[in-house]
Length: 310
Image 1 (cartoon, rainbow, N blue to C red):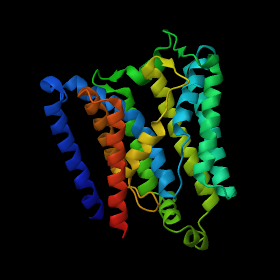
Image 2 (image 1 turned 135 degrees about the vertical axis):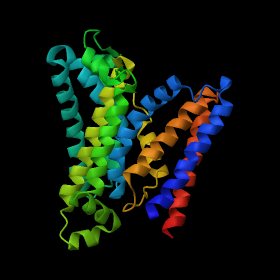
Image 3 (image 1 turned 90 degrees about the horizontal axis):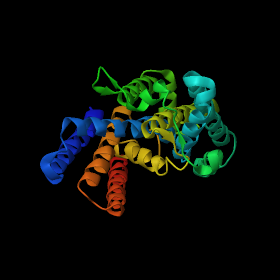
């Protein structure tokens, strides 16, 4: 019942935004089939990042490194693609992401440093490593790498974009993990009260490492899809992706203090952020005002969360 009460206003917000942009965007083309498919493809990358971010925020953490990991993993995958092939490139990309996830998790679990500082540092390391490749210049994906290019641009049955299908699989996997397993129950307990979780015997350090590892692996997956969509690895790409992911999580109802949240809400939050981005862009709103609008949306979402918790 509580989940339905939180979800219905978000669905109403989607309907209101779509109606507003259908009226605002010239020639009423916002609801065009091609435009909606393009919108879904844009939402996919942020949603995949947001699923991992939900797990991190749920335990009271934060991961600022995901945007830089997107850039680094995309660059690593494209760099090794001609030498190792599609499977080898995916393996190298995910291994790179896993290294950052384990580092973030171990530092958060075993040191008194706050996750904000830890992931801020690893964000800078990942960004610097990405910019070292090819002197910071883009690395184009070779034309013959059809599998890699299909990951971001092909359509299943000629209709459903592959990134949307990957997003659906990631959503199903993380939703089952969070809502149908003991691991997910432990995350809620950990976010609700770390001390109580410790007294009940929940393995806090192991769960924390697994959460950051999962978040980074999803960021790596998003990074390879993003590089495929761009037809090249852009070492400077992914800037601000972590903020969009956090926005989707918070707008979707996950409490920034931890212990409260759900994957369906995060998916709806990612859809809302995607509609705002594309709608404001197509309506010709200056990019500076787009940032301001998203900031106001986040502020309102956090305010409502604080009121709900009180």
